[in-house]
Amino acid sequence: MATRWGIVSAGKISSDFVAALKVYPTSQHRVVAVASRNIDNAKKFADRFGIEKAYGSYAELAKDPEIDVVYIGAIHPQHLALATMMLEAGKHVLCEKPLCMNVKETKQLLQVAKEQKRFLMEAAWTRFFPAYKEMQRRIKAGEIGEVRHIMANMGGDLKDIPRNEVKELGGGVTLDIGFYPIQLATSIMGGEKPMKIIAGGHMTTGGVDESFGVTLLYSGGRITSLLASQADDLPSVAYVVGRKGTIKVNYPMWCPESIELPSGTFYEPLPKTGQTFFYDNSQGLMYEAEEVRRCIMEGLLESPGMPHSDTLTVAEIMEQIRKQVGTEYPQDH
Image 1 (cartoon, rainbow, N blue to C red):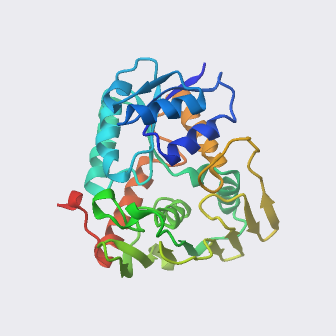
Image 2 (cartoon, helix red, strand yellow):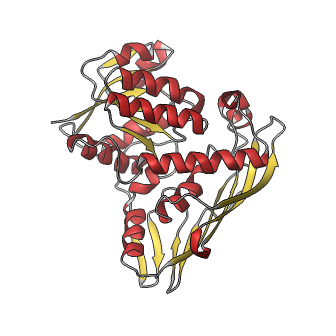
């Protein structure tokens, strides 16, 4: 039986998500409807992808009985309200990262999902790439011994995306691309909360964080060093250092096709889809979609690959970084 999707917001990332679903037959994944606040945008999106229904409001999509799960690709500040609406309408939810604007909102949304007994996952797509899963498998198998250090960075000149500087739109590097090195560290550290978070960075003229450097201190003498910037081109790679060896997550570390292991290179290329994408390696959104389908079919309410506990830990780390660098959002008050 097909997993029936509804798409919330008709922007670029939603376009890439639907394009990635084209890898699968409609007997597995079928997009039933798309919603936008602008009905014309919804209709154009639906025409482009051959989607049956287009709605001019998110509430209409929430009421559609033919939808099993929704993908939320709207901007960060809208996530809490939209995901709550969909969960309370009985839909399962895959919501773009960050799940919410801060820790308070994150806890609130996780509670809604629990009360409604519906599946909810933050769209940490990185975790479901074959290369990333292979890294986790090798670490658990002891190939590099006990992990002692993680060094990860991600950065680019994102000045051509105006909302990245606008506080009211959730601008700032931490909630955007800074999410990726933070979730990587959290995943490899088994979801453990850091003992101490030491962060610094620079602000934009719009009053949001342009860059950060953070050291996360974990139990047992383990240390993580992370760097993110929306002004400078960083290598965007990661190193996981164990007592017996090192794993390098190659560029682009947020959607990698390959990793360097002590025993050699693991490489699994993304499938050729014939689709047009806005962002790097967006074919890989197929992997998180398949994880959502698997979890729903097995009756799970959260994914073992991105559990709610990890979402909350990442939110706590991001909030501490923002506070130490100096970014505050209206939702923080």
